[in-house]
Amino acid sequence: MATSQHDVVVIGAGPAGYVCAIRLAQNGRKVTVIDKAEVGGVCLNRGCIPSKALIYAGGIFDRVSHHADELGIEQGGKPLRGLNVNMNRLKTWKDGVVAKLTGGVAQLLKANGCTVIAGDAKFTGPKTLEVKTAQGVETIQFNACVIATGSRPTALPGFTVDQKKVLDSTGALDQTSVPKSILCIGGGYIGLELGTFFSKVGAEVTVVEGGPGLLGGVDPDLAKVVHKKLEKRGVKVYVGHGVKGMKDLGAKGVEVTFEPRAGGKAITETFEKVLVTIGRTPNHEGIGLDKAGVKLDAKGFILVDAQRKTNVSGIYAIGDIAGQPLLAHKGSKEGLVAADAIAGKKAAYDVVAMPAVIFTDPEIATVGLTEAEAREKGVQVQVGMFPFAANGRALSVGEPEGFVKMIGDAKTGRLLGVHIVGAEASNLISEAALAIEMGAHVEDLALTVHPHPTLPETLMEAAEATLGHAIHIFQKKPAASAQAQARV
Image (cartoon, rainbow, N blue to C red):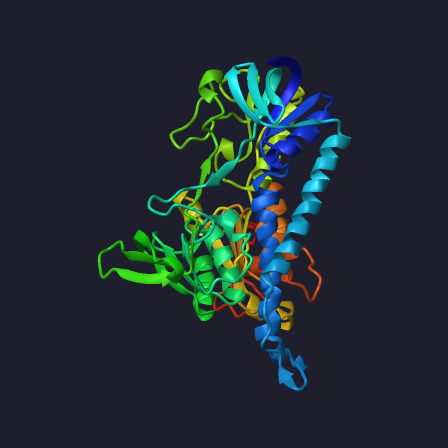
C-alpha cells in the first residue's frame, strides 16, 4: 500500500467540491480532488442540469403542440397537432449538455493545477485517508481536508428502486420513452419538476403528497398557483395521502395503494412507472467519519461553524453534507468560504438570504422571509402583491399566471423577502437577493427605473404595491410608507 503526502484534499467534485478546489488553487494551495464518480457531482450529471434541459425541451413541445395555434401559428392552415417527442434523441441532447459542462469543469481543475483521483476515499484517522482506485489502494496524508460528499435520494420502504419500474430522480432523467402513466410519490420540488415534464410530453401523471399541501416550506400562496396549473394540465394531485404499498404486476405495470392520512377510503391504481422523490439523505456513511472523529447532527449532517470547520482541526465540510438548504449554489458559496478560511483569510458564511428556485410551471423563486416567518419574528410587516396578468411582457409571451409577493418591515421600510411564482421567476429572483443582501428598502426597488416592457417590472410594481401606491393595479386604501410618515 503506497503512502503519499498531500496539502489539501477535497472529497467530492460536485458544485461545492470543485468550486472549493479551484479557489484553493487560486489561493496558492496544492489541491487533490477525490471522487468515486464523475466531476460535476449530482448537480451536473444527475440533477440540476439534465433535469432543466428536459424541462426546457418539454416546455417547447407543450407550447408548440398545444398553444401555437393560439398565436396563429399553423401548418397547412391547421393547428399543429400530432407531434411527438423522440426520447432517445432528447436524451442524447441532454447528455451532450451534461458532457460539455462536466468536460469544462475537468478542464478548469486541470488548468488550475488540481490533481483529480477517481477513487473511493475513507478516513482512517484525523489526518489520513485510504483511497481505493482501479490501480489499488493508497494511503493519503493531508494537512487539510474538505468533505463535499453530497446527498442521495431518500429511500422509501416497500419501494425498491430498480430504475425500470420504480425510479428515483436519476432514473427518471434517463428514460428512453414516454411512460403512459407515472406516479410521483412526493410533492416537493423534484417530484413536481419531473412530474410536470412528463405531463408535458404526454404521460398521465399522478402526484401523491403526504403533507397538507404541495411544496412544503414554500409560501402557500405560491404553491396554490402551481397546484392549480397542474390540475389544469390534467395531473391528478392527492395531498394529505400516504402510500401503503406496491405490487408488481409484471407487464401490466405497478399497482400502488395510497390513502388519506386523516382517514378514509384507500385508493388503488396501476401505473407504468413510479417515481420516488421524498427527499435527500446526506452521504455520511462509509467514509470513516468515526475514525476521524467528525461529529454529526441527529439527521446525519456534519456539524460546521461559520468557516465550515468541523469539530476536528483541519477538516471542513461543505455542500449537502453540511446541512440545509440542499442547494448547489449554497454549496458553491460554502466552498469559497472554506477555501479562503484554509488559506488564512478572513472568511465566514454570512449569507443574509439564500435564494431558491423551483422549475415547475409556472416557476417559483424565493429569497428572504415569508410573510408567516416575518410575523412569527414579531415584525410589523407590509405586504404587497403584483400579478403577472397586469404586466405587458407576461401577457405578450402568453404567461399571465402568477405574481410577485413582497415582504417589508413597516417600521423601517427594510426589504425582508420576495417570493415569485410566474414566468422566468428563476431569472427575476437575483435582483431581490442582491437587494436584501445590500440592506435595501422596499422604496429602493420602487424608485429604481425598470425597462419596459419586461418581466422585472413586476418587482418594481410589487414594491409600489407594498408601499400602497401601485400604478397598474387598483388599491382601495393607498397608504404612505412608514418612512414618508416619519418625514411629515
